[in-house]
Length: 133
Image 1 (cartoon, rainbow, N blue to C red):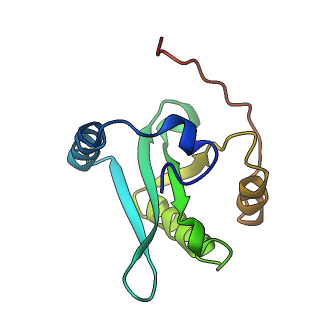
Image 2 (cartoon, rainbow, N blue to C red):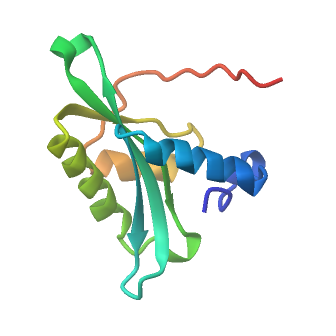
């Protein structure tokens, strides 16, 4: 699912061992949660990563970062994503977070509409600096 869109197809494709090592590191960290979304027939059709981040701002509050949100292309448009993200928000609240944040690529216009419908606001400008070659 990571490579199942125009952006992912250009940046995914590392050897399987790299993904397995990343999975093991995430799985070993109690501030990380990898979640899957299953269709009624038990097929995994979505994924996301929830990271709890301690911080000094907002009175030392915890915040949650939602990343790597994917829904299999064959299952998009079936209204599976909204309950999945709401579940992640509830899980962040359960873990004591006071804020949930995420980033989405500027080109993902449909994703922007989706997140706005869920109550997210584009309140900040995100910036990245690649450290590869």
